[in-house]
Length: 291
Image: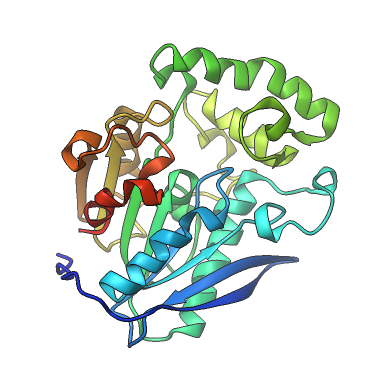
């Protein structure tokens, strides 16, 4: 079992920008370090379409209040890691979820040898570990609002928006522009076309990504993660509702798994949803994320 870490002030965090090689790509990231020796380091793998800067406040809280370092970073061709025209990007969701997440974890292992590595995955950040290597080096896994979701899992009326995103003007716009123009469509940041198409395929297929095993994806190692795994669902998450989150437990078959549902009302909050767990406005729930 993971020991409770008592809350105190560990001093002003030390923050530095970092660059991480991931194959031919370079990822832009930030390492937030407590003032003293860290108890652990979190590699925070972000959600699809969520820029690393969104997680910075949480990373600073980890360092200041828990004495835990945190690496945040943007996937290739996105956010601060985007250097060229998105139309020219060949990135796929599998590049983000396998190669970039692996590169971030390998980098922190070199930079901070001997420090326990926690992997914290938000949405996409939590379900790609079985395709990675060196899983035995992970001390703890925490997944937040992560799971193999199908479009039919969404409650109505949100499901109508999801179907529009997968079958309406979003795929047409992606073909027209050569990338997903999320800003123009009101769906969030722009995304590389390859990321959108792979994401679309998985979320509209009943067996999610299993058709890609041995093709676009390597065969997964369902028993490679043996450390404690905490699987967290948000009660008011329409994008990846709890029933989809619980499927994630099959991805970590040899781990000691604990489940948790976070309800906004339990923390005096009005809503959290799929994205909001790491928002400073919802910091009242942060202790629950790492407990």
